[in-house]
Figure 1 (tube, rainbow, N blue to C red):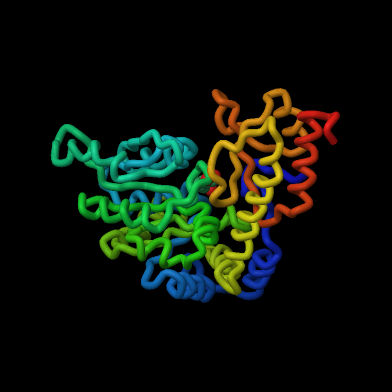
Figure 2 (figure 1 turned 30 degrees about the vertical axis):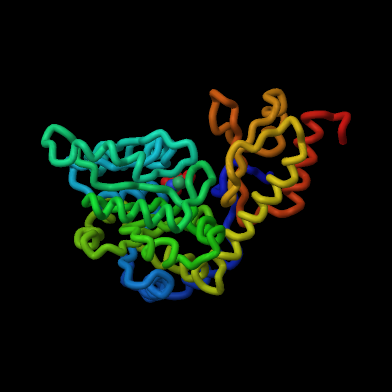
Length: 343
Ligand SMILES: Cc1ncc(COP(=O)(O)O)c(C=O)c1O
């Protein structure tokens, strides 16, 4: 089965699997004091500059640790109404931080200073949670990518107003590949304070990382990691995957390829009159509306999600292992289902 449902439907990249195997040859000190974790930390440092790195099993866990690092229970966290932390984490960020989330409507999945500014009226008022964190996703849940300038504006705005910026980077590799810059330029140089760095959606079996750039946020991070049940005693198996991911540009090769496949899909369907591509294709997601009667038959062959049940907007995600052939077969199935006389 080849699916377009999510980039976590894919398997493990062979180089990652080899890395896990390679880490299985000896005993190592547990809880992250091992040589693999040390090497992975060095690689992160070479790509981002000075950074504290903590590992996590999943993206929700990484977001929880990161948000704990920047908040006290009377704070609030600003995000979009499509943010994973708001929609898809079963309340874990609010439950574990004690903070409220302020989800703002955003047509393109992005936050701007203009959207956030009205919230600042409550700053200093003891009756209101205090806005402390701007949490953004890069690439966004709507498949868009913040430009460097948009990131800088947002970070400057946050810091001027005594706030931090958390970046949910479940798909940061796709965004950075799309921006054609390096990791540091796209994150810490824009002013990002802390981020969740995605692995699972880009070829790992299991593993995400929290990268802390702002020294103010480093102090209690290990305790939050442990208390969030994200400290892995055999961390070398997560770290080994990151070593492979961050070496020889594997992260880039996979993310760039997934993005290319999304662009191919968009261009192949752009000529089908019954299909409307609904959002910019900046990274590895394509959003579209197709004739409603075609949805179910197509899902039976190629699983994918209906993104919005009200508008019947669909989301198709491409992965590191999506092939040109997969796209062409998908497109011809789509054409055939919409109009069998045409193919
Ligand atoms: C934007 C974003 N953040 C975080 C995650 C991580 O989720 P999980 O906890 O399932 O690994 C996802 C996965 O869908 C995501 O899309």
